[in-house]
Image 1 (cartoon, one colour):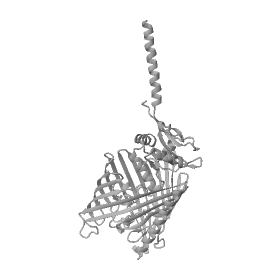
Image 2 (cartoon, helix red, strand yellow):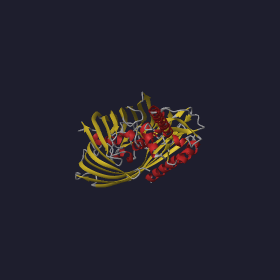
Image 3 (tube, chains in turn brown, cyan):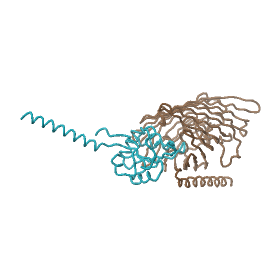
Image 4 (cartoon, helix red, strand yellow):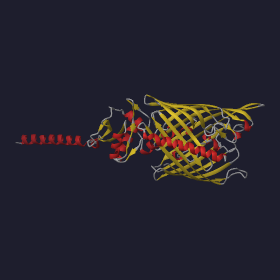
Length: 355
Length: 154
């Protein structure tokens, strides 16, 4: 019943968003854009331990519905994910354009690092199938606050044909129950989330071009009563870069993650490093090969990481992407993964599209 | 007699050069930034055109600018993307998608038919696009805001 209520509310929000998007283009100063990102994938794993919670074979499918509308300086943006495992409003933002900056209110992607601020739930835009595990979504054993709800100010300033960009978030982060649980915009009173602050600064050698380098820092207070903690105070900070020179692309980031776990009988602080580097090479207009390495350092005996036994701490993968027809992609990804509970191989075959 | 013949040859060569030069001028091809004749816009720098067509919201003289992507002529589109945007079609599309998905800025609409493009330019305040100079000659209701690129081979 609760699930049905949730779906009904989600449907109302979708209808409201669609109505706004549909109505606004009737005005001279308004425009709207819609995108659909369906995906269907098959997963094969080998080498799982006997009591692993993962299956040898699995499937995934879903569709991300995205819409944006603009009326003068006013902006609306919504993203809804319907998938095998979840139906959720991922982003719901109302914004205002002020010069080269945008001021948003609502639920948005936390601007930590590059991947999370660049890619969202439409995996067609990513060359790979998987996201780096350090920026994995909360539902998929993610360690960091990926979705925030509150205020986001972002923009880029031109200086000598270069871009100096920033994103500042003052928001509400997730609480920790089974997974990290960000605020549900349809049931805002259902959780006990707390403060999250993020600052991301970056440099574009040529303004509005894809190559960029940046630094970021996030502070989040994570209530975790159901896991035996009064609160977890997390700081994650790091550096990232995205370099593109056709036919090559390199994306890399490093994260330092420190967690202060507060219990009635005392407080302990643990920290670890994590990072990834992904290389992509366009063989021609249709074929792209890619590879990625992900590492964690000083993660042994980390008490925060121990709360996420299925989080992938190390991974090596390689893959190939075929852009077939118009806006359809077939991807194959082969990886070797290590979690605290498992060490296994994985092959994923996925179809992605955009309409 | 020989002198006269030599002078005649030089004269002929000069005439040929002048003629070929004038023919080259009439066939020289330029890619122009265009908008409605009624628009108050006067000009836009190449950097501003790049910014606009990359989907960055821009206002000039209190008019919100609307980029319209002309895909009716593949060569014109390719030249525009290579010389002004500095990206291939694939990179450009990826950049626009990334921007709309991240920031919500709508993508420039594409027009495969030049007549439909011209109508949109006339009907949409602040709109602009690009086309070859010889195409603009037939469009009395449009005006040029400047040369984006000239074919230097001619």
